[in-house]
Image (cartoon, rainbow, N blue to C red):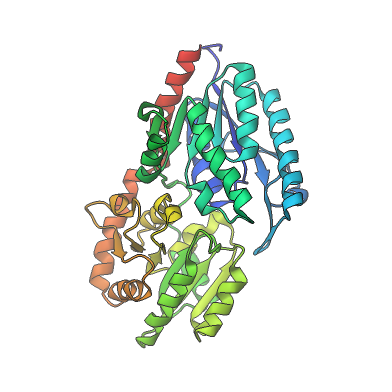
Length: 411
């Protein structure tokens, strides 16, 4: 590698940059690595590839190139899952495109975002052919957190999730649960970097009071204390139904409360139906997918934000982006004591922890905050302080030091 040039990092993603991890983890990392004097290119799959008008864009100095369809198709608030034969065809085409475009990039280092079959195989072949470092990011327990169509698909995910980290030069992960799991599976601890999720403070800035007031009126939230959920509506990995059932108990208390659900996913309609069955449709606002650049506005509508969690392997392996985004916007969080959540909340108690998978416990936690303005303010102050510990600009510098070490060892 020419030491006078900027090192070229090639990220291989099986999702687009509008997905939660794409937008909340991989793009901020890429953006701030560019500011740390790296060249970063992202080759990604897209949830609706046929409708993408600009396949190659440059954003904040990051080159983003969409090359093929991802393993599901998303249109509006709906998710379409391919049949097994269609999935194999889509995956094969994605693998071929990821590899053919990757080899043209001439990278100095490959970064795999989530060890899925398509990007894993492309990365392994390229790393071997070019003798360049391979970095793998494990930001979820993939075999448990993904919606699969059968045991065969789950076994495939599990295989790549276990195989690729052992072949990598560096493995990053965002939870101690996953760090311990990787270590116990045979990945040397010295090859693992704990890199939690964070928040891009440039994206989550304080909006004007006028903008917030207009949106509040538009959504019919005036006069109500608001509980906010911001994220995917896929029950296989996000138990939003737990929140909806808990909120039904909150409504029974007789207060003026509304639940604001911002996001889309495969169970969007199922959750709407559940709200109707519980008789709270008039108290639940579903926005569907919104402009990601306006998320700071939506967070400011909430008096309390919620990260619902069950005590499952998937939830233990998750480092919820909504925690950091809520804290950055000064919104106190109700979640459950699962995985790293207590550690993330810290001694400042930036989150109120309830019992996992317990509707009554979550309802009580919500009511304790909604009905106590002093407690909400205390937790809001703690949240704002806690967010400073999880700034993507700082986290990217931590990763930069590791990447430089790898590049120097290979030069």
